[in-house]
Length: 254
Ligand SMILES: NC(=O)c1ccc[n+]([C@@H]2O[C@H](COP(=O)([O-])OP(=O)(O)OC[C@H]3O[C@@H](n4cnc5c(N)ncnc54)[C@H](O)[C@@H]3O)[C@@H](O)[C@H]2O)c1
Image (cartoon, rainbow, N blue to C red; front, side, top):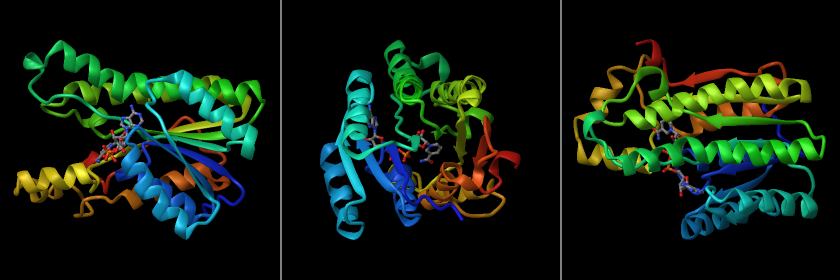
């Protein structure tokens, strides 16, 4: 189940949080993993630790994904040196600023839209260009957010950006099906990442409040998302295409 043997899988934003969980799961399922992140110190630290366990199966590239020229070079360089890339997980995202919609600054709007939507679009463009030029099939997984489905008070532009990610996934699926390139999105609920852990420290009641709306009564882990991503990258999901799948302990139907 979820076997990724002989597959090269590229994961963006892999140095920590959900991206690291996805990386660990792909390695557990026998993939070789290309870890991409703009935070070089963290990327070196986490990739070195994984390299010592999974010898020869971990590659790391320090890259700002807003630079699509640099991203396509990384993809092509890897291909020329090590062979085809069989799967991509577009996980990296960030937002800027918090606040009610009417107080949100134009600068934070632009930054949030760039980092939560445009960056994924740029990545997807490079990946599809690469796959199309080389006539390769692949599975692509975009990481969205349940904020797109439920709204997010004080973070409305991030939520709207993720709704755009969902829509982009569906349109891409319509274009890519005929090329035998599968694409899906995972929509996580609240996941215990370093950022969420910090938030729980600052707001002691937040964890219990959030848990009360999760039907399975626990906050998700990066491994929960990693498990689902490995499945979508593997042949076990070969007839799943153009879907946005919530991994959230049932919070989206609460
Ligand atoms: N944590 C949650 O509860 C949660 C819930 C729903 C969706 N998500 C989504 O899951 C994904 C991962 O979230 P996370 O909480 O693990 O985030 P995180 O901030 O812990 O990790 C994101 C990683 O992306 C990297 N990154 C950011 N900008 C980059 C850039 N320009 N170029 C290259 N790398 C860059 C960061 O350095 C970081 O290592 C995001 O798409 C996020 O929107 C998270």
